[in-house]
Amino acid sequence: MSNSTDRETLLPLLERIAGALERLAPKTQDRPDLEAADALVWHAAGHVLQPVKKVNRVEMALLKGVDRVRDQLFDNTLRFARGLPANNALLWGARGMGKSSLVKAIHAQINHERPEGSHALKLVEIHREDIESLPALMNIVRQSPQQFIVFCDDLSFDTDDTSYKSLKAVLEGGIEGRPDNVVFYATSNRRHLLPRDMMENERSTAINPHEAVEEKVSLSDRFGLWLGFHKCSQDEYLDMVFSYAKHFGLDIPAETMRAEALEWATTRGARSGRTAWQYIQDLAGRLGKKTS
Image 1: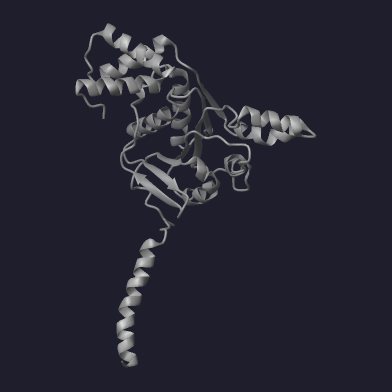
Image 2: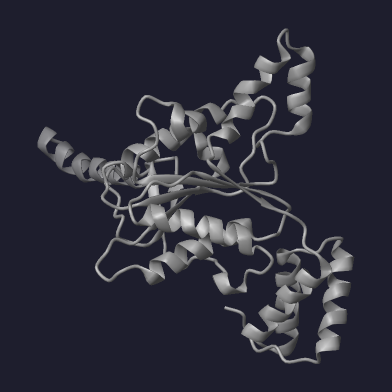
């Protein structure tokens, strides 16, 4: 076989191998299409902003028992959307009381009310395990004319975790600092984002206990807005249930619904917005109704 024949045979094979390797390689996204959707998810691997066409959210009017924190977060977000100064926000407290639902509902409400022709407010979700990649995300959105809420759900740090330093630098401490077109919203079950036993261990074993824990506690100080979510009362829980039922047209006798909802909460050991929603999902399924 001649050299020219060998080349003719090998060239298509090499091109197929190169194409296969290119398809397998992680894709990078240096210039993401920020107009693709109002909500995006940040993937640290490849620095990809993935558009979310349909956000899993509840309408703001359906969120009960959180009126004060709802109004505070809405006002802060509205000021930010208008290009005015606004604070990073930490939503902390009891599980299932609507912390992440409130962030998503306010984002939708503000975009619904925005003036025609203005830029939509963007919601970018970053996963807890990708916090160390925050500086890369900031570099992507920093030059955009749009406003971004960077949102991390269920944020907390464990004993040997040092990734909180990346968040600390981005929020206020780094040489570049937080871009003017970005606010950072986080939800957590912990007010200081750290487990209590971790803070106590730091204090008990350090030469200077106060200084040993101060750096880690100071992370929560970089959130100018602290919003506490507490366990709801029975009346508030039932108000959530009846509001959901009315919204979705779930028609059963009020006393029956009340008894079922209370039993549902008792079997789960908690009254919360999440528990109310789970009961409504069960009720809607039994009635053959949809809630989406």
